[in-house]
Image (tube, rainbow, N blue to C red; front, top):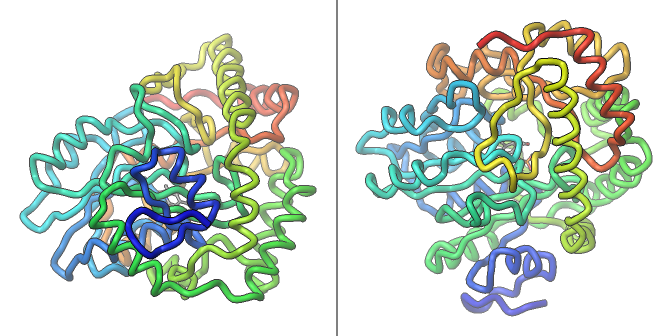
Length: 394
Ligand SMILES: Cc1ncc(COP(=O)(O)O)c(C=O)c1O
């Protein structure tokens, strides 16, 4: 184990390797899930009941939950028209004297307008936490690493993320004071129970053989069913959909996850080049058929998690793709995915609060870019979309 610079905490080898991507001045803390990493960061910021944290109204519900578990109030800002990340103008409108922090999410791996958001945060004395759950570690924006702009950032290595340890999360910071507090918070988190560790290990082995684009819908449905029965460890707990706090949001990373993470973290280059070349391939195919191509900020350097597209018939298209065995992603389906709009009030979200996000969630689908997708899969997937849908009107 490597000696962590801030004192008596020893970083695990995986944490050391992860933090080394960001430089010798960074500290890394590993967790059972990304949401646990965010929860630990927020806890370490010692927020109080009155404090507010701004986040995009286009995210996973667990992000809003982590804010609530830490004792603060989630305040939702809208996303950019035609894009998927925070709109700085909307963030400005949401700032009050109670705002303490801003969560900047790089949705699908597309960098948010982080410099403008940083400037706003500095002007108002807010901490920036980067949500890098969709970011492949090492991805850059204008020459700087995503995850190194904020006071802290967190990554996810859950099944659907850029690389996977089954489930997993990592908190990163170079702020010495925050690192010291995170060291104390991390020590209060529990080790995952042996049973869940073992279940994850079995799931991981099955995932390696089952998770293929043609079997996507079948694997998704089986996984959900098995986790509802308690046979598999689910990515989310049904409690989280109503804002309740599950036990595993307070767990550190287990030994199995650490081992897989350590083995994978040094081998991200083929993953990056596969994702970049497949993104270019999708863009060429779609462009040839007259579809508008989303102009990602700083497009040359980014590595997408999934390839987002806005279509005019999302609901039907997803249903047809499920029947045809075509892998298409649906997220985000609502501003607080996967919670139904009718239940958003449970997380203090009022309908109409983020109109662009609400409308985008009704139109967006995403195409897979993971390492099991071949060019012929990409052809099949694109042909399916082209023949069953049209671009959404803006
Ligand atoms: C944007 C975003 N942030 C955070 C998370 C939480 O990551 P994890 O599943 O590892 O807790 C997710 C998804 O799961 C996500 O999509």
